[in-house]
Image (cartoon, rainbow over all chains, first blue to last red; front, side):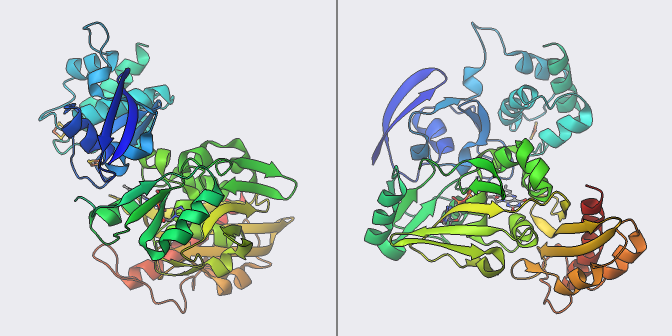
Length: 153
Length: 283
Ligand SMILES: Cc1cc2nc3c(=O)[nH]c(=O)nc-3n(C[C@H](O)[C@H](O)[C@H](O)COP(=O)(O)OP(=O)(O)OC[C@H]3O[C@@H](n4cnc5c(N)ncnc54)[C@H](O)[C@@H]3O)c2cc1C
Ligand code: FES
Ligand code: FES
């Protein structure tokens, strides 16, 4: 077991972890932050996307112990004072999901995509979001939601 | 999908990393971005008893333009390479490759050094490093060696790196007329076929060319007959370039899988070689 200190959604967390715990499993199983989803567990679907030090990464593809001192933001950490993050709101307004399984990953990725300045038009958004699969194929509405959220910034 | 148990160490400098490698021998594995190693560990194709995390070793994540070209630290991420003005200017083929690896999330964690050390037959960088004549700096307890890319990529998941060695830096000469194009696997984005080309131009003609291909053979290779056939060709003559590239995969046993047969891969190698050369010529 290894001692680990992380800042998750602004809150310091100290815990002992088995080194094989992925960041995804740590969030879900140890911190009960089950908004982050595990789809493929092999880097291909994007459902587990979170932000580490402000950049989007796949939490299933990284070990928790590699993130000593890092700031992690999950879907649970983006609403402010009880109101949804603008990208969350845009997803609701544009009906950008069906089953919802991919949605937290899509939203975390979308927030980063807008911050990276890659939400100017649908083609750019689709390329920048290529790491997030949606088995329900809500893609058209996801792209529309991201474009709207970017424009209203 | 849970790896077998292992210990974890995070050395702060190369000396400490060498000491850990010496102590644990074959039982140890280095980890950088983890984007190739972790999938293998989850499938238990790799079962190290200790992981040595080199991702926080100082001084290995630089992108430096020097008089002789570029010096790139092994820990530079794909995203950093893709975003670098200097890389785009001095080695556009490398920026092309970096920008096309996987997706943004993968590029934010995966490293140049890890991708080279892994030796995946469908990885993008090996073709670029061969075409650009890269030199790879390899550090060990006793000292350092520098290998030409031609001597580094040896076969499927096989490189010149020995178990106790760490790839620290990759140096490239300036290659302004260079490009990398690929036919990506639609799901993983790995190269079904990927071709890097670097040209020296003399007026309107190709004075010399280096062309390297990944995805097709057991490891990336130089297409030397294509390189020869390109010399003297008019850089604007698409038909002449296509015919010089026709035997791009000659003499290579092209891999077959569910996605592409060997003969299809070989045919696409010729097509993508011509595209890479054409793209390099107009840079
Ligand atoms: C979904 C997905 C899509 C991908 N798509 C592509 C693609 O399109 N094209 C492509 O080329 N790659 C692709 N990759 C692989 C990706 O580029 C990896 O980042 C890269 O292959 C490994 O880099 P890493 O830093 O993650 O290495 P790790 O996984 O940490 O290590 C890989 C291997 O290299 C060794 N190693 C790492 N660093 C060093 C070093 N400095 N010295 C010596 N040995 C070292 C490790 O011990 C291990 O054996 C993809 C990966 C994923 C998960
Ligand atoms: S669960 Fe991480 S990418 Fe699919
Ligand atoms: S909404 Fe069902 S997978 Fe995307």
